[in-house]
Each structure stands twice: as C-alpha cells, then as structure tokens.
Length: 357
Image (cartoon, rainbow, N blue to C red; front, side, top):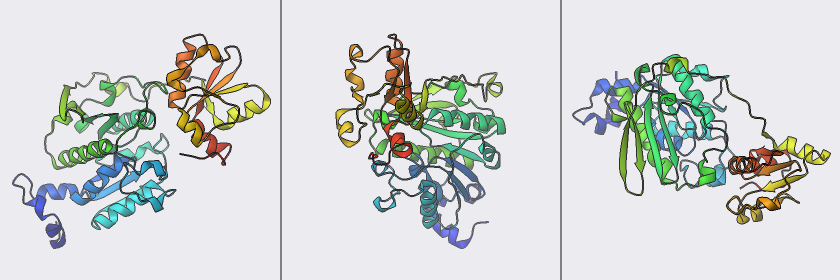
C-alpha cells in the first residue's frame, strides 16, 4: 500500500490517466542494480529515486575527480576524492527518504556478479566493454533484463537487453568483445556533459516503463540518438538461438599490456629502453615522464621510433596508446608494450609527484 505521504509525493505521476496506484506499487516493490555512478549513472539515479523505485543498489569502485564535474552533476567540487557510490547513495536518500539505497564500493566483477540474481532489473551505466559483457552474461544467466546505454562524441545508443529473460541480448547485437583500445572511451574521444545526461535520463525512463509493465520500442530495438540532428533511429533486434550458450566465453589473453609499475621496473633494469608518449602537447605540459619520446598520436613518425629496441607506449588512460601500438605492430614493430592505465596509473602506482588530470 502507498502511504498518505507517498500519495502526496507522487500525486503528479498518479494523475496521469495511464498510470495508477498499482504501477506506483510496482516501482515501490522493485529493486534495481545500477552498475556505475559516472556520467550515465548520476543522470539515472535521481529520477529513479524521485519516481519511487523502492530499492536501489549502486556499485562503483571509483572516486570523484575534478574532470568528472563537467558531466557528473550530483557531485561537488569539495567532494573530489570521495567515493562516487557513497555520494550517490546520500544524494538519492536526501531526495526521497522512502527509497532504500545500498552503496557497494567495489568494481562489478565475476566475484560479485551473482548480485544480479537478487534484483528485478540492472542498469548498465559503465563505460568499458569488459564490464558491459559481464553484465550481459550475468543477466542472461539469471534471466534478468538490463538497460544498456553508451555514448560516443555526439551520439548515444539505448536498448533494453534480455527483456523478460527472452529478448535480444547485448551479444546478439555485438557478439564479440572489442580488444583493448579498439574503441575509445569518453576520456579519449571527448564528450559534452549533456550527452551522458540525456542517455542516463532515457535509461531511467526505460527502467520505469519496464518495471511498470509498459511497452517501449527499446525492449526490442536498438535506438540511436543523434544530438546534432535531434533524431532517433531504431534498429530491429533479434535474439540469437544460441544466446544462452554464448555467455562467459573463454578470452584470449594478449600479452601486450603491462602495469605502470612493471614498466618502471623494466626501465630500471634496462629490459625496456624507451617510453613513447602519444598524448597531445598540452597534456605533456600537465604531466610527463622524463626522457620519454613525445609524439602525438595524430602526428606519428614511425621512422623516428626505435624499431628493434623494446619500448612502452603511454597515453592518459591506456586507450590511445593501445591504438597506436596496434598501428605500429602492423608496420612491423614487434617489441612494444602498452602501459595499462597510462600516465594516470603511473602517478598512482609509481610516482605520486606526477600530477593527475
């Protein structure tokens, strides 16, 4: 039953002819797992809490960084360095005290993927493919739906995957996980804050429709929204006959990426002779490694890169450098390794005096 206070709180949505107390109760009794409290998550979480979803579990291992604040608008400047999951929990609880919120300060991984079986719906607010495919496989395993969204420069994608446990899955759309560095994240490609905000709002809308039993095109189609033309394009999805058999595939391990700590150790021992920094000049001014070869990704000069010597390729977070590494491998460079996490990881793991940005 809805309390008098809840009826007053939700009176505007209860006034909609197609929305009644039974649908509001569905929201009240629902439990959503939100994976990621970044650009997508901070847009979805407030509207889910405000709408009256009874239980929210937010999982994110990350902390607020200054560069997040242009798009992750529930966080403040004085909260830089604090846990995103804990801050998002506090924000949602202050917005609606009728909602029970759990914060898990962990990365969503195989070690905790069974949490999916305890919820009614999962919302994928991540920005990396490894986690997204794990979410898909976990939802297929436990018969749960998840609301997928992704952004790239000016466009966003949206779909409800594995709807009702029988709908098309993410692997039906994109069967194989791309290799590291193949597709840039927003850290690499850039993003204006409104785009994850818009897609996160759409995820909240799809979650509310799904839990309330309302139909939506996203439950059977992949939607692509272009912010420049303000047009939405729909692509029909079909569930593969072997969708349930394709989860948790054995991954091929590519030994071309090592940690910043290991690169530092190999530089010291002489096993690695040079570091190729492929960031932009303005980034070198912010933070740099002494002695690194500085050559922007878009201005590569392979003739100036030692071909026989062993080297490590570095960027900000490891995405651009992986792209460059594969490009150089195709040109016969066989002795290169990628620095996992880029110079940001170097600051965290090797030399804290190097500024993070």
